[in-house]
Length: 471
Image (tube, rainbow, N blue to C red; front, side, top):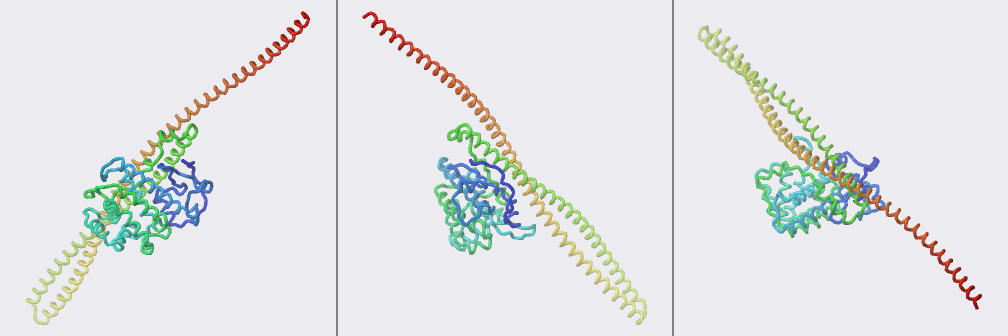
């Protein structure tokens, strides 16, 4: 694991679209996701020039869009590799509840959403990759069966849900890699749906399509009836790819363990901050929708009162018209010819005016009824959107709690590693003291040995002198 520290704020040539996309995703542009064996690694952008990864030479290493593409490609590598290995170890057909398979679909969804062009709808701007997937049917006729099956599935109301169902059916048919290669090779058609720097328009998309070939070795049986694919929250669970303390202890000793744990702890804290920001944004959107809902409710009440008033006016006009008509008939019977003609003309004129007034009131009533129906439809759609946002908020809060728990566990591991490092340092210092003591003892023994040698030599010289004197 590389050091994980925030990048210093520096001006980059980004547009409003890039800024908006960065807020909508959880890929950190300040970091690079890389693959170390079968684990997730992060590297600070300032360190990229010192230890560069293989990447196209024409790309700017500080470009946030290029970093997002590389991060998504590496996440796809980890997800596909983990899915294949776990499926082979499991030794049975995979179902919809299998966690690595769910994470694979989430990663693929993020890859297909990267760089999508905005499309305006009734409730604002919307992004969907379903239009791009429909191109496969035009390029490969055998894919028409999947598209028809998706359109016939009950309960799918949004393009996002249809796109998710299409991915699952293509995986079950073991044709996902072939279909992805087909549409990636036609960038002239994809340009209608994607920006020029999107993942599907660059070489990372071709790499991911090549990696998908390995999924042909697994079998999946996914039942989509009754599954709510429209409102699922696609959040990548990074904890599935983080290193665990037991694994790192086999390859790293002492300070290396502490560094790896601190790297993971810092990364989880960074992800925690981004999730907190997402939760706050969703809460602000929910509050805004509640205010809009209250305002629409008040407008609907005013419209209802207006409709009631107009209905009363219509009834009153009907009564006055009938009364005037009856009066004109009585007057025509009682008067002479000239008087009868004048009264009848006035009555007819007044009746015509009342009839026109009645038609105007009825038209206004129809307009008010249409506005009422539109308001009711808008309120229903807003309520549905609020429910989806609240579900997403609950999911994000749960993810936040899980990350906090993981953060606490990493902090405990860091503390235990620090204590172990201190104990090892104390043992090393004691061993150094004993080594120094033994070196002093050895020096003293060497001096004693030299003294003994000198004494032996003096004794031998004295003995030789004695022998010479005796002779």
